[in-house]
Length: 180
Image (cartoon, rainbow, N blue to C red; front, side, top):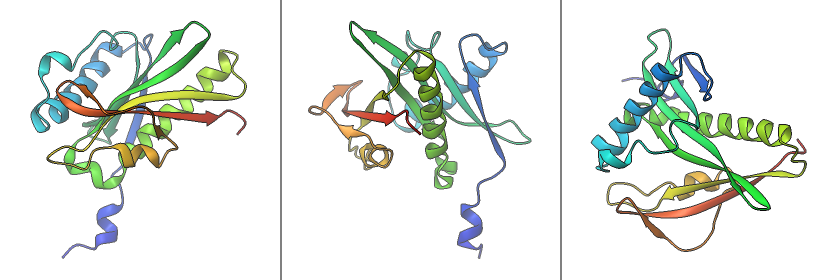
């Protein structure tokens, strides 16, 4: 029987940031989308036609891959939303393949996105905090949802549950200090 502690040691991996201007963006974005299709469409049953949307071409994506195989196993994306007098960053499409979730790679992806958002906000002249919004899956028949996961990073529920792509979601908002 394998040692439980050994099962929690993550395999060697890398997280690649894929901004809109990345020289190999097309190939890396396709890997991100394929991981999303595996989780959201095949595993969770969301419709394929809603998985790729108008934000994919301009968003910054993060791709989690195993080394040395370069097998894509996770992804997340973000884009800036501008409103008159305010702006925020939208965290979306966080997935890790089922067989790798026990390594806590989702945490690594969220923290990588947070670091990018803080840097981006500072470079845009923000001095106090960066606001990040996500639409978290709420309780599903096959899982407890992701609300508790996002709370660990300082996200708080805002508003009521709402339908997104046929499933209940919760708006979650984090205000992360730029003082650190």
